[in-house]
Amino acid sequence: MTEEFRGYRQLSADYNHRYITHSIGEYVNGDIHTNTIEGAWSLFKRGVMGIHHYVSRKHLDKYLGDFNYRYNTRDLGEGERVNDFLSGCNGRLTYEALIA
Image 1 (cartoon, one colour):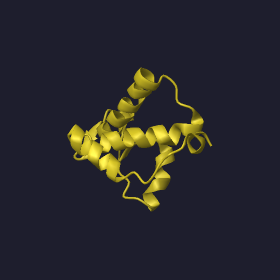
Image 2: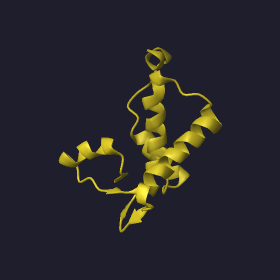
Image 3: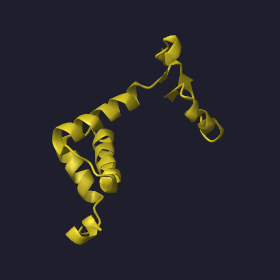
């Protein structure tokens, strides 16, 4: 689900793509809206500005992965989230591997 930006129209061939038309004042049409993704991006931007202050292009995917995980597990309690996180870890991350 997107807004009417033309660049998204190519998605329709591969995805069930539906959109709303902000330019005519449409923001919700049944279950079609962009509120969820706008909320997720808002949390990411506030996190970068309020916690990290700067995100390098080199590690952007790591920051996005972190915020994506936290957003997708927002309904878990802290203990559940820690246990879920630890169950997904597979070894030690060395500093050399991190900065490579």
